[in-house]
Length: 107
Length: 118
Image (cartoon, rainbow over all chains, first blue to last red; front, side, top):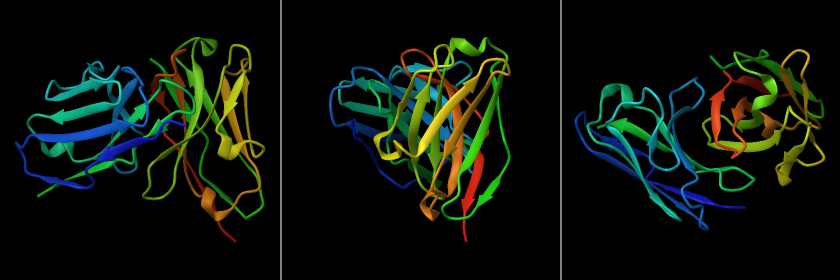
């Protein structure tokens, strides 16, 4: 199974900050990586797929990059509505596996 | 648009089974695969398995083989996930989701809370 190691968790930041989360795969997954946002009591919402492509309607302050084993997710200008938990997930091969999540909190 | 409507909250005793349903609408049911993911309270996401509504093929996570069964009913555009021999560790929210042939997840159901308690 491919292990996904996500950091940091939690993460404290202020409105307007640039926030960066990293995700490392235990083997090469090419660009088969998604980033999700999950708010309490809600299902995850897709933000980015294929490591760097924004899903329709996702604000441009969200960005993903990387390929192979190392990936980065950035929020360039943190907004109050961005307070949530963020997960990475690989879909290069079954079983699908997820990072442990990063809870973004307001400082 | 694609919508997945899941069945309601379940409360089960240890050793029992639970069957969660997921009714799809807004697309041709056999177009996308269905995956099941669970989330224990305050924890991360765990993949249970995948089923193709097109041909019924399945792939289950090793951890759940022998205890999980996934089925579909194309006449009602519904998918089902049954988990047997429940323990308290199975308490959590169970999600269905659609996925492309690449296994990229596209849309999620709202989740079904399963509580296992004596």
